[in-house]
Amino acid sequence: MKVPSNHRLNNIMRKSKLGYSSVSITAQGYGCMGLSEFYGPTAESDAEKILHRAVEGGVNFFDTADMYGYGHNEKLVGRVLQHYPDKEIVVATKCGIVRDVNNPWHREINNSGEYIRQCFAGSKERLGRHIDLYYLHRVIQEQDSLREAMHTLYQLKVGGDIGAIGLSEVNAETIRFAHEFLQQLSAGEFGLSAVQMEYSLLTRDIEKNGVLAICKQLGISVVAYSPISRGLLSGKLQDLNSLAEDDSRRHLPRFMGNNLQDNNNIVAEITAFAQRLGITPAQLALAWVMNNEVGVIPIPGTRTAHYLDDNIKAADITFSREQLAELEGILSGYKIAGSRYPEEFMPSNLTS
Image (cartoon, rainbow, N blue to C red):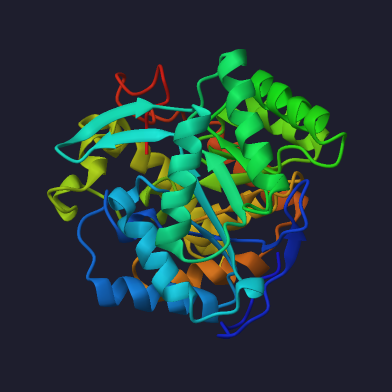
């Protein structure tokens, strides 16, 4: 295993091309969502500082969405990233989830062409810059709706308004259909560039449901959100009392009741393994995602400077086959307790 000896700000992190695009992104991105909501309050000045630190640490790929903080997150990201040349920064944002400011739990999906264009205009204004990667945040996976949405995104792409097209939380069949439809429209010039899914040591559904395989086959990049399992894989979340009252994890099954203790039993084993390697469990989790043969790009988000620095170091960690096999052996002895989201959110993937 290779571990970096120390962290250097202004480090050059290795990059790769985002599938079916000319966009070049770092091996690890930064998920901006938690700077606006879902994990408790963050002072505006602290949020700005952590974004600057991410850029200084070598990260060039930043992920936001129009629904995060009802537009606040895009404004924050745009305000900070205006200090850096557009060509050096890659910004991804998303549309498709409709929220109600009077009911934080309300979710609807709208993938109509008119709504996508309306959302795009709002996101571009809030960000104040070119949008490099534009996702459907959640997808109505019915073919006529999908054709309309993909045709609208195709028009934004060929018009130079966006650099690449992505989908979030979709199945393998939808990925193939959307990709092939875009290829037909563009005469093979481009297709889907990215698929964003939850993926971590504790959430490995995409290995079994065909999503990872189809993305590898078609040359589509996989962007992994919650790669540290919403902080669970840090080994520092022992009870819910440490969380802010408005922290969304208080309502997620994996963190509720006995599930948290059961899952922390897994994390304790992972932590012990990481300690033997001389790294933190969060670094282990991130490095494992980046060591995947498909080339998955994790987008961890943190509001703490030293955790951010630790996360960035993980981009330089590699494992031997023997170490990966040992880790698999540890994981095979456990089953994660609880679903990713409350049951009422799962059928339509109406999640954040």
